[in-house]
Figure 1: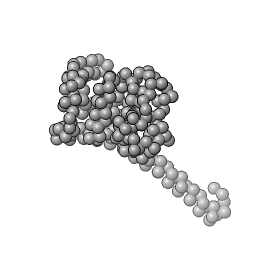
Figure 2: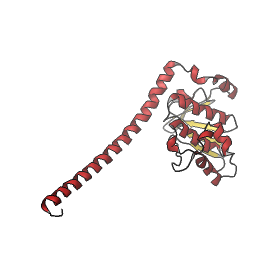
Figure 3: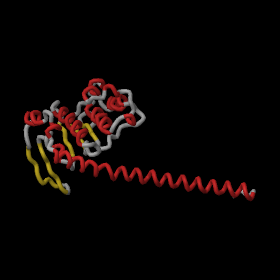
Figure 4: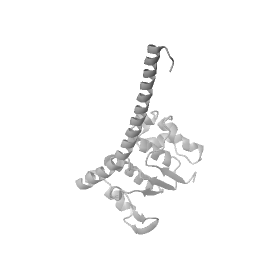
Length: 212
Protein backbone atom coordinates (compact mmCIF):
# COMPACT_ATOMS: atom_id res chain seq x y z
CA UNK A 1 0.00 0.00 0.00
CA UNK A 2 2.75 2.47 0.89
CA UNK A 3 4.54 2.02 -2.43
CA UNK A 4 1.93 0.85 -4.92
CA UNK A 5 -1.44 2.41 -4.00
CA UNK A 6 -2.37 6.08 -4.17
CA UNK A 7 -5.52 7.71 -2.79
CA UNK A 8 -7.47 10.80 -3.87
CA UNK A 9 -10.38 11.90 -1.68
CA UNK A 10 -13.41 14.08 -2.34
CA UNK A 11 -12.43 16.60 0.33
CA UNK A 12 -8.68 16.69 -0.37
CA UNK A 13 -7.40 15.72 3.15
CA UNK A 14 -4.36 17.95 2.84
CA UNK A 15 -2.59 19.49 5.85
CA UNK A 16 -3.71 23.13 6.30
CA UNK A 17 -0.55 24.11 8.20
CA UNK A 18 1.83 22.91 5.47
CA UNK A 19 2.58 24.54 2.13
CA UNK A 20 1.68 22.86 -1.15
CA UNK A 21 5.20 21.48 -1.62
CA UNK A 22 5.43 20.34 2.00
CA UNK A 23 2.11 18.49 1.62
CA UNK A 24 3.25 16.45 -1.35
CA UNK A 25 6.68 15.83 0.19
CA UNK A 26 4.95 13.94 3.02
CA UNK A 27 4.99 10.96 0.64
CA UNK A 28 8.77 10.74 1.04
CA UNK A 29 8.20 9.59 4.63
CA UNK A 30 6.41 6.40 3.49
CA UNK A 31 8.06 5.43 0.21
CA UNK A 32 11.42 5.46 -1.55
CA UNK A 33 9.93 5.63 -5.04
CA UNK A 34 8.80 9.25 -4.96
CA UNK A 35 9.14 11.55 -7.98
CA UNK A 36 10.71 14.99 -8.08
CA UNK A 37 8.22 17.37 -6.35
CA UNK A 38 8.92 20.25 -8.76
CA UNK A 39 8.11 18.06 -11.76
CA UNK A 40 4.90 16.81 -10.15
CA UNK A 41 3.75 20.34 -9.25
CA UNK A 42 4.51 21.49 -12.80
CA UNK A 43 2.46 18.62 -14.20
CA UNK A 44 -0.63 19.59 -12.17
CA UNK A 45 -0.12 23.32 -12.83
CA UNK A 46 0.79 24.29 -9.27
CA UNK A 47 4.50 25.03 -9.47
CA UNK A 48 3.92 28.77 -8.94
CA UNK A 49 1.82 27.96 -5.84
CA UNK A 50 4.45 25.69 -4.24
CA UNK A 51 4.92 27.94 -1.20
CA UNK A 52 1.25 28.75 -0.64
CA UNK A 53 -0.92 27.22 2.08
CA UNK A 54 -4.14 25.31 1.23
CA UNK A 55 -6.29 28.16 2.56
CA UNK A 56 -4.88 30.39 -0.18
CA UNK A 57 -6.01 28.04 -2.95
CA UNK A 58 -9.32 27.42 -4.71
CA UNK A 59 -11.17 24.11 -4.39
CA UNK A 60 -9.87 22.92 -7.74
CA UNK A 61 -6.30 23.83 -6.82
CA UNK A 62 -6.59 22.00 -3.49
CA UNK A 63 -7.82 18.92 -5.30
CA UNK A 64 -4.82 19.16 -7.62
CA UNK A 65 -2.59 19.19 -4.52
CA UNK A 66 -4.16 15.91 -3.43
CA UNK A 67 -3.61 14.50 -6.93
CA UNK A 68 0.03 15.63 -6.86
CA UNK A 69 0.50 13.98 -3.48
CA UNK A 70 -1.01 10.73 -4.78
CA UNK A 71 1.08 10.56 -7.95
CA UNK A 72 4.30 11.61 -6.17
CA UNK A 73 5.05 7.96 -5.40
CA UNK A 74 4.22 6.82 -8.95
CA UNK A 75 1.59 4.29 -7.78
CA UNK A 76 0.55 1.21 -9.72
CA UNK A 77 -3.07 1.75 -8.62
CA UNK A 78 -4.76 5.09 -7.95
CA UNK A 79 -8.07 4.96 -6.01
CA UNK A 80 -10.25 8.06 -6.37
CA UNK A 81 -13.30 8.61 -4.16
CA UNK A 82 -15.62 11.15 -5.83
CA UNK A 83 -12.63 13.30 -6.90
CA UNK A 84 -14.88 15.85 -8.63
CA UNK A 85 -17.85 15.77 -6.22
CA UNK A 86 -17.03 19.12 -4.58
CA UNK A 87 -16.02 20.86 -7.82
CA UNK A 88 -17.85 22.68 -10.59
CA UNK A 89 -18.07 20.89 -13.95
CA UNK A 90 -15.24 22.80 -15.65
CA UNK A 91 -12.77 22.29 -12.79
CA UNK A 92 -13.93 18.69 -12.52
CA UNK A 93 -13.06 18.14 -16.18
CA UNK A 94 -9.57 19.53 -15.57
CA UNK A 95 -9.08 17.10 -12.68
CA UNK A 96 -10.31 14.16 -14.79
CA UNK A 97 -7.88 15.14 -17.54
CA UNK A 98 -5.01 14.92 -15.03
CA UNK A 99 -6.19 11.48 -13.93
CA UNK A 100 -6.45 10.40 -17.55
CA UNK A 101 -2.84 11.49 -18.13
CA UNK A 102 -1.73 9.52 -15.08
CA UNK A 103 -3.49 6.47 -16.50
CA UNK A 104 -1.42 6.86 -19.66
CA UNK A 105 1.70 6.45 -17.48
CA UNK A 106 0.87 2.81 -16.66
CA UNK A 107 -1.18 3.55 -13.56
CA UNK A 108 -4.53 1.83 -13.11
CA UNK A 109 -6.94 4.62 -12.13
CA UNK A 110 -10.19 3.60 -10.42
CA UNK A 111 -12.79 6.33 -9.94
CA UNK A 112 -15.82 5.86 -7.68
CA UNK A 113 -18.52 8.33 -8.67
CA UNK A 114 -22.25 8.99 -8.86
CA UNK A 115 -21.69 11.36 -11.81
CA UNK A 116 -20.98 8.83 -14.54
CA UNK A 117 -21.84 11.37 -17.25
CA UNK A 118 -18.89 13.47 -16.11
CA UNK A 119 -16.30 10.68 -16.31
CA UNK A 120 -17.56 8.61 -19.25
CA UNK A 121 -15.45 10.48 -21.82
CA UNK A 122 -12.30 9.60 -19.85
CA UNK A 123 -13.05 5.98 -18.98
CA UNK A 124 -12.08 2.77 -20.77
CA UNK A 125 -14.09 0.43 -18.56
CA UNK A 126 -17.35 0.78 -16.64
CA UNK A 127 -18.32 -1.28 -13.58
CA UNK A 128 -21.76 -0.53 -12.17
CA UNK A 129 -22.53 -1.68 -8.61
CA UNK A 130 -25.55 -1.64 -6.33
CA UNK A 131 -25.68 -2.88 -2.73
CA UNK A 132 -22.27 -4.49 -3.09
CA UNK A 133 -23.20 -6.43 -6.24
CA UNK A 134 -21.82 -5.92 -9.74
CA UNK A 135 -24.67 -5.17 -12.14
CA UNK A 136 -22.61 -4.30 -15.19
CA UNK A 137 -18.98 -4.73 -16.25
CA UNK A 138 -17.99 -3.73 -19.76
CA UNK A 139 -15.13 -2.28 -21.73
CA UNK A 140 -16.14 1.06 -23.22
CA UNK A 141 -13.17 1.96 -25.43
CA UNK A 142 -9.42 1.60 -25.66
CA UNK A 143 -6.86 4.17 -24.58
CA UNK A 144 -6.33 5.51 -28.09
CA UNK A 145 -10.04 6.26 -28.49
CA UNK A 146 -10.07 8.07 -25.16
CA UNK A 147 -7.12 10.25 -26.12
CA UNK A 148 -8.71 11.18 -29.45
CA UNK A 149 -12.08 11.98 -27.92
CA UNK A 150 -10.63 14.16 -25.15
CA UNK A 151 -9.11 16.76 -27.46
CA UNK A 152 -10.88 19.97 -26.49
CA UNK A 153 -13.19 17.76 -24.44
CA UNK A 154 -14.88 20.40 -22.31
CA UNK A 155 -15.71 22.57 -25.31
CA UNK A 156 -17.53 19.65 -26.90
CA UNK A 157 -19.70 18.73 -23.91
CA UNK A 158 -23.34 19.31 -24.79
CA UNK A 159 -25.03 22.24 -23.11
CA UNK A 160 -27.59 19.93 -21.50
CA UNK A 161 -24.79 17.83 -19.97
CA UNK A 162 -23.08 20.95 -18.61
CA UNK A 163 -26.33 22.06 -16.97
CA UNK A 164 -27.00 18.59 -15.54
CA UNK A 165 -23.46 18.27 -14.12
CA UNK A 166 -23.65 21.78 -12.69
CA UNK A 167 -26.93 20.98 -10.92
CA UNK A 168 -25.59 17.70 -9.50
CA UNK A 169 -22.43 19.31 -8.16
CA UNK A 170 -24.46 22.18 -6.72
CA UNK A 171 -26.60 19.72 -4.77
CA UNK A 172 -23.43 18.08 -3.50
CA UNK A 173 -22.07 21.39 -2.21
CA UNK A 174 -25.21 23.11 -0.81
CA UNK A 175 -25.93 20.63 2.06
CA UNK A 176 -22.32 20.89 3.23
CA UNK A 177 -22.48 24.70 3.06
CA UNK A 178 -25.74 24.73 5.03
CA UNK A 179 -24.23 22.44 7.66
CA UNK A 180 -21.24 24.76 8.13
CA UNK A 181 -23.58 27.76 8.23
CA UNK A 182 -25.75 26.05 10.86
CA UNK A 183 -22.75 25.26 13.07
CA UNK A 184 -21.52 28.84 12.72
CA UNK A 185 -24.99 30.15 13.67
CA UNK A 186 -25.18 27.95 16.79
CA UNK A 187 -21.71 29.01 17.92
CA UNK A 188 -22.58 32.67 17.37
CA UNK A 189 -25.82 32.36 19.34
CA UNK A 190 -24.00 30.62 22.21
CA UNK A 191 -21.40 33.38 22.35
CA UNK A 192 -24.05 36.11 22.26
CA UNK A 193 -25.98 34.39 25.05
CA UNK A 194 -22.82 34.14 27.16
CA UNK A 195 -21.99 37.79 26.50
CA UNK A 196 -25.54 38.85 27.39
CA UNK A 197 -25.36 36.96 30.72
CA UNK A 198 -22.01 38.57 31.49
CA UNK A 199 -23.32 42.08 30.81
CA UNK A 200 -26.43 41.43 32.91
CA UNK A 201 -24.30 40.25 35.85
CA UNK A 202 -22.04 43.27 35.46
CA UNK A 203 -25.04 45.59 35.50
CA UNK A 204 -26.47 43.99 38.66
CA UNK A 205 -23.10 44.17 40.44
CA UNK A 206 -22.76 47.85 39.59
CA UNK A 207 -26.33 48.56 40.72
CA UNK A 208 -26.50 46.53 43.93
CA UNK A 209 -22.88 45.96 44.89
CA UNK A 210 -23.65 42.22 45.20
CA UNK A 211 -21.47 39.82 43.23
CA UNK A 212 -23.77 37.46 41.29
